[in-house]
Image 1 (tube, rainbow, N blue to C red):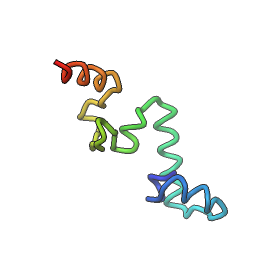
Image 2: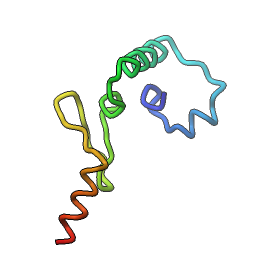
Image 3: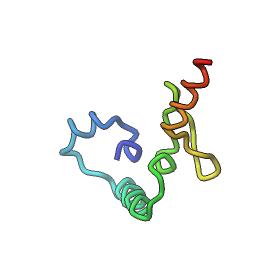
Length: 78
C-alpha cells in the first residue's frame, strides 16, 4: 500500500480512513495478485536494503540476501 500511495506505512496507518481512488485500488490489487503468485517483495517494491544502502532491483537483477551480508562481514575481517 505504501508503494501505491507513495507514502510511509506510518502515514497510511494514521490516515486509514481515506479511500483509494480507482487507479490506486487496481494497482494495489495487481500487487496483491503478483505476491500471491510468489513474486518476491523486492521485485514488487523495486528496492532492497543491503549494507545500509537501498538498491534498485527488478526481474533482471539478483536480490541481495541477508546471508551475503554475513559472508561479506567475515571476508572483511581478513
